[in-house]
Amino acid sequence: MEEAKRIRQLPPYLFARIEKTIEKAKAEGVDVISLGIGDPDRPTPDHIIDKLCEQAHNPANHRYPSSAGMISYREAVAYYYKNRFDVELDPKTEVVTLIGSKEGIAHISLCYLDPGDVALIPDPGYPVYGIGALLAGAEPYNMPLKRENGFLPALDEIPPDIAKKAKLMFVNYPNNPTGAIANDDFYKKLIEFAKEYNIIVCHDAAYQDIAFDGYRPPSFLEYPGAREVGIEFGSLSKSYNMTGWRIGWAAGNARVIEALGRIKSNIDSGAFQAVQYAGIAALMGPQDCTYKMSDVYRERRDIVVDGLNSMGWNMEKPKATIYVWVPVPKGYNSISFAESVFKKTGVVITPGNGYGIYGEGYFRIALTVEKERILEAVNRIKDKAGPLEF
Ligand SMILES: *Cc1c(COP(=O)(O)O)cnc(C)c1O
Image 1 (cartoon, rainbow, N blue to C red):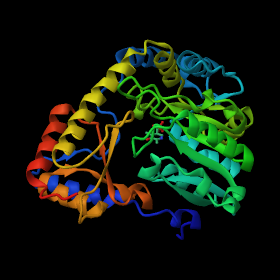
Image 2: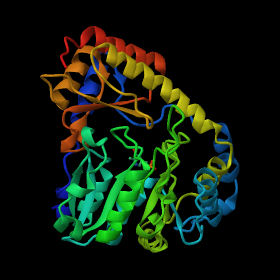
Image 3: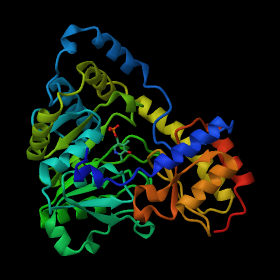
Image 4: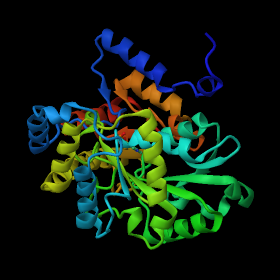
């Protein structure tokens, strides 16, 4: 049973080995603290769960949904954009429901990439961008996200012959894994670049409501010209602790939204309507839950960054996301440091090279465990992981 080239070319899953090590340690009785996985630990707010329960009883919702999503859900997305960003969207043509944004991020490559085409991919980055391009037979071109550039891609360093061949570009701010944010100037240059080279921008906004210290992340669609060149992927997963529910959206350029909807109508049959109703409750309901969750993450972030800085790191606090992106100490690479920390402390951190070659030299901490455990993890690293040099 010979597998197709497209799946044989998928990179090996780097985290499989780490997971095995964790299982083994747990079986041996080690008290493992995992700061590895970016999956919110708190429950979905009650008013959202209540709406699901109510709508799950309605037989009308037991039938096939439409693959583009209920118009009322798409209207709720438009309401959210108006309310949150003062952006007007036509829910009929400029919004499509997704079964989690990952689904749309993977499928958009099938809409626009043929073999030989290029997709511009942030490195380090969420692995789905590059994998989607590979599955479409296209060539991912990695744009390095470097600390000295604020973890923004240097658009003027992309070779023009590559930019000419590129049809899609993935951008993600607030950023996983670096925690970086993008400013107005970056978005304006991005739109100019996309216009110049005729590239579709796919902005992944999974963390647009998880932010700290008064910072409010903008939407890509707020910027003049954005809708002419691209779309934004949105997710309820991180904002409302709904990773398991599988619900999100894409919004923006009507032609791109139509193409994505066309692919989807041939592959899936849409998101469970009761989940879409729950999504409406999330997007149109009180937003204080997102502020409260941001505050929970802020407290955890402070414990991590203050703790690391007390050991000799010199880190700034990220303004958004559920991650802290940290350079490894002298004498280590990403893997050797993650392994050493795990062996000495039972604390799991994610080696940065799992997110791309430019992630080498870093590790990622996910702020998705309670603060007592985060503090315990930081203290163990302080007591046992050393001596560390910077
Ligand atoms: C978590 C995450 C997503 C969201 O995925 P869903 O499929 O909506 O759960 C998308 N992009 C990034 C960068 C993420 O970290």
